[in-house]
Image (cartoon, rainbow, N blue to C red):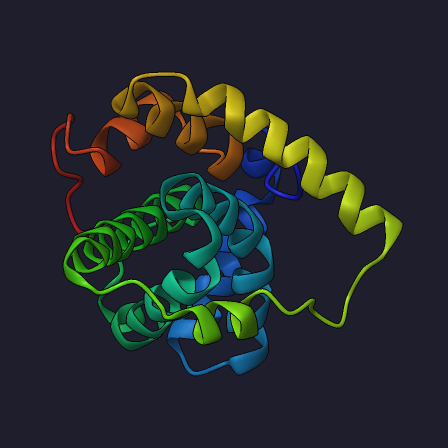
Length: 175
């Protein structure tokens, strides 16, 4: 389902992710970039499942918060993956709440928003189609089940970590 992959692939990166997070907490910008590259694709796909086309804007807000609070994070690579998923979920839910009270864009604004972007490659189109189909299938599930599937398959969290993100598990100490 896109770049996020499954939990086995996510787990394989957790050692590298934990090391990068540790260095990033000490101010290493290149290490922060490594952590971002490992985590962002899955988080973006997860948030896209929650908020649709506004996912990149929501993730921008989430990464600002992640960068701001990085020094307070305690844990390993898998813990960081869960911590960032929790932040992304909160920003997505905030976005959905704001969207309910925000007026819809005017026709002119919508025309500008609908202008094509600069990228248009075959690979991007094929990935978008497969991701769209998968999200459509997941969208047919009850919301809590859909979120659980996205957290497990797209973000790569294990069952207990996904439950913590959704608020159905015991809080993790220090993360």
